Image (cartoon, rainbow, N blue to C red; front, side, top):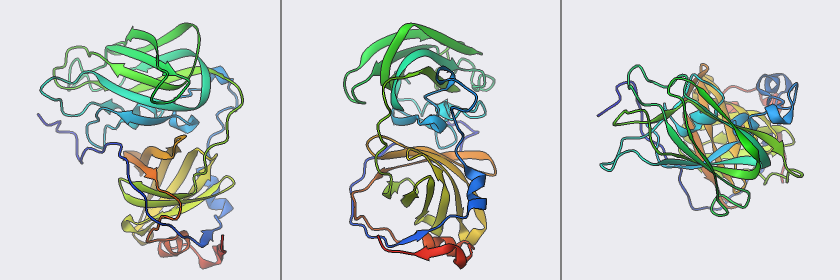
Length: 323
C-alpha cells in the first residue's frame, strides 16, 4: 500500500566515518539580515515549567527512531511545535507496525512534571484509527543507551490532546517513547506532537563545540560558529547558510542555485555531535536535515565565503582570516 499524498524517499538516522579537514575563511554575517532569523527567547514571558523542553527550538533532538513515512512525515515533526506537521510510521513489516520507538534528548537534565501526547491533527479522515493509542514512556538521566527507568504507560486520545501530570517530578535528560498500538488502522500509526514540561536540575553544562563538518542526508555541511552567529556552506547545489545559535539550536537560512532558491532550517546538535532538524521552503516543512559531525580536519569542497558570493552576497561583507 502506498500513501498517495506522500512523495520522496525514507530518510533514517545514520552513522558516518570521518575525513580530514582544513578551513581558513569566515563570513561576518550582516546584522540586518541575521536579525530576521534570531532564536526565540524561550524564557521570555514564561516560567521554566511552561517551557516545552522536547521542542526543537528549546533544544530537543531525536537521536533514534524505528521508522518514518518519507520526508513529508518525519519523526522530527513530533517536536517541531506545529500542529500542521505530524509523524507517520513507515511501511509496515509483515509482523506489523509495533512497537514504534523513539529516543529524544533534552538540552539538560529536567525534573519532569508533565507529558503531552497531541493527536488533534493526525490524518484520521483518510486513515481511520491511525492515531497512537497506547504509549509507553521511559526516562534516563545517565545516557541515551543506559540507565532507563519505566515512567508510565498512557492511553492517548484519538482526536485530542492528552496531558499527563506525573505523581511526582522525575529527573531525566533522555526520553524513550514506545507506541504499542493505535485506534485500529492496520497499516500505519501517527502522532501530531509530543511535549514535556519540568524544572531544570543543576547548572546546564556547556554545549559541545559545533564547529566543523557534518556528513548529512544532503551531502557535506560545514558550520562556523562565532558567539551567537553561525555561517556555513554545503556541497549540494553550492549552498550557503547563516543565522543564529545558542551553541545547540541553529536557526538558519539557506540559499542556493545562485540565490534563486532559499528557505530556513531549524537544526539541533546533540551532546555527541549528531545534528538533526527540519528544513523549510516558502514556510512549508520539506523534510529532515540530519547528520553526524566528522572528526576534526575533515575536508569539504566549499567554504562560506565562496558560497556566500556564489549566491549573491556582497564581497564587502566578507573577511579573510586564518585560524
